[in-house]
Amino acid sequence: MIGGLLLGSFMRIAIMGTGAVGAYFGALLARSGHDVSFIARGDHLQAMRERGLSVVGPRGDFSVPKVKATANPEEIGPVDVVLFCVKLYDTESAAQSIAPILSAGGVCISLQNGVDAQERIGRIVGNDQVMGGLAFVSGVIEAPGVVRYASDMSTIRFGESNGALSARGIAFSKACEAAGFKAELVADIRAAQWQKMVGLASNAALSCVVRQPAGVVYNDPDLIVVARGAFSEVKAVAEAQGLPMPADIVERTLAMHQNFPPKMYASMYHDLARGRRLELDSLSGVIIRKGRELGVPTPVHAMAYACLKPYMHGAPD
Image (cartoon, rainbow, N blue to C red):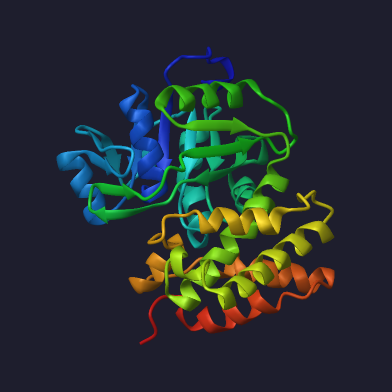
């Protein structure tokens, strides 16, 4: 298994949650020759079994005509890496389902949103078998078996909880780079997650409350004031925990969002628009709860949470 894996060797990889993020990175890894199994369900699963997986977007389209796809992780057998890409509200149930395929020494790398997924997974499969991670890609399942990515972002960052640059982490980062996307093994994954949370949680909240894409939210002068407030709240909550945050992270995050494709929405907006459950409680909800615990005001996120709470479990009846 991965503990003795030579750098450059091909890996057995499972994608737990073949939504836009999992499908995108999994397709690139499969195209490069790794043994990738996609865990999915419904029409998306059926389409992958029949026609494979197609990826379309601004840097070019490609397809993997034959993929391994299943609804049952136990059919896969032991793997070196699980890329864990499920929605945050499915974390515990999904972790239970992948525990058997990690039993031979594999590692689970969470690419979920938020800041606490690896601890939640670790309580089920063992902390030493989990790495926290971040995904930087914007995409959506356009149709069963088809994922559309919306920007030039194509990066993951991940790391061991103890900050070690481990052999298994180096091996997987090299596999990712060879597959055509950036992979950075970072020493302080928790600080990196909170730095991403500044934009992630705020963009999800504002995109859903305003129901408009980045080109509107980050160019309207009144909304820019609100965005700066949301970014600043997350920065303050992180710093109150003793986590290092760049001094210019608010303005840097605003500039990044202003450079997003004008029609790009936060992924949570797509769930809202389709009447699905929202990750709200693990995004703005975490900011609010941590803020209360640490005595940090979070009025923008509290407002967004209150407005979106009726939709948290799907479209109201």
